[in-house]
Length: 108
Image (cartoon, rainbow, N blue to C red):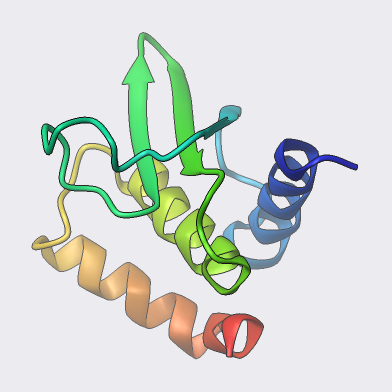
């Protein structure tokens, strides 16, 4: 199973475990060195976008293994709360909910 297939499988697991299977369809793409865009985007290992009704998550294929689950979940929160930002109350509440649901035990 390739990295892109593993990322999609992990998305499905997290969707079931932490979102009750309610996440929309998301196309997960691996991008080589997501950070090499000349500084146009302030993203470290992941990016979320939406075209029409379709969401896309891009994950940097060069990120350390230790970052995969955390980055994927971060991008999934973007999908759930689209178009809310990191600074919104909804974002903070969602991160708190995930922590209380045990997500941090997944990554540490």
